[in-house]
Amino acid sequence: NRSNKRSDRILCRKTRQERLNVETEQTEITEEELDKYRYIHPYLYKRGLTDEIIERFDIGYDRERKEITFPVRDIEGRCVFVAGRSTKCKFFRLPKGLDKPVYQAYRFNSGKYRTAYITESFLNCLTCWKYDKPAMAMIGTGNKKQYEILNKLPVREYILAFDPDDAGRKATERFRKNVRGKIIKELVYPDNRDINDLQEEFLNCKIIF
Image (cartoon, rainbow, N blue to C red; front, side):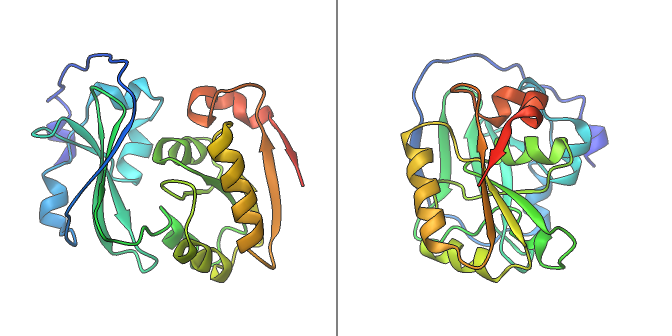
């Protein structure tokens, strides 16, 4: 189990390489395969994640690829793929030829959460949850299938927290055009840092309509 594997810490090195969006084939993931990734890497703590968040969201580490792993589940809660984020550069591994679900959307099916933060990345989403702000991630800037999911969820209010850059602003515009019948607000960033960079400071950010 994970508690026994926590002693297996692999050193992490910094890099300045730019993000690469390279896709690879992936199939539906079983619990047996997920168990192979249930290790903890120091990079997770470097990005502000806690043991509680790591356990709750099943964040792991692929020792062969040297990637942080994020199990991605569909709206029914089935794990459809595992995304990878290199610990050595800004490289993300996503599946080829598969419509991206909304990360963590299945947690909102029951109607328990009436407000949701919407982010681009896994880490920004998980940072929201760390501070008790229920969130979902688009794993990018949004697509038609994801908007359909968001329109159907029993969520009353969406707070848009896309990255504070040109791509994030375009994602905000597209979201407003495609999501209907919801209260939509936006998080106002103090500078060019995203939620994961800001950590608890993001709780003080202004929220506007």
